[in-house]
Length: 361
Image (cartoon, rainbow, N blue to C red; front, top):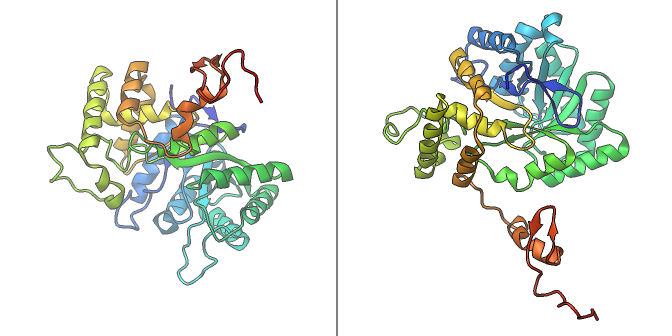
């Protein structure tokens, strides 16, 4: 696969590159990140390689991320129209203003107008609900998004960091009312974050939402940068996103990734990214890059073809533990199938069923 081998995002006709350029690191306003000039070089190289999908949010680097994108590509129609520019709402940029964030109609529409201004564009290709606002009825949010799509200011909508049951409620409601439904699902997904496979990944597969994983290297824990030997000497600037995962379980996984990387003449980071890119339902994996070299290295993950045995090894090392009701699923074939094989799944009949010759009461 290559960066210019495009895929449709979920149940839509929107074509996106298999890797999405995450722009959370554009700008140094938070004390870290890329300079404006480096951000521009990263965008140019991404586009040169065939990438067309850029993701940001209204409050990334205090809104500077959107402005950097707008200044470099948004104001140039020939560049802008060839790109899929995604941004998010929900984040509050205005201390003291309770309507400055969240997912109410007032906030959603205002955030969209400000994002359009900063991005210097007439439309947003993909507008994400950044995270679930428990204080706003989902029908209010979906109605506001319907209005933005109807007005031409937004082309498609997606959802991020929201419970599966709430997403299902929103999409079913939208479909019944003739409103646009979410086509994309942005979730944290990596070898070290697989709990999304309990509810969110099955939801995406059932509803046709294209998954766009964020933090596929778990805040750098899977970059190959950290080892047992340098654990005490490396600068760690991701705090709670990284620290809990620098442990023996992760280092055992890194040992396996390094061994696989040697076979493929590749890197730990590329192998970890290749695993994510190959997961069921994943359409486009979001990668961030503070430096141009990081972009070049990570895009190389698309050339790594893991064998079924390698995937199975990584799966076994990182298998998540599911809670109820998924933890009961192994016994369901015995309850359902009556001792027969259904879609290749066999289990002996449950002891609660009838024995041949018996009749039910």
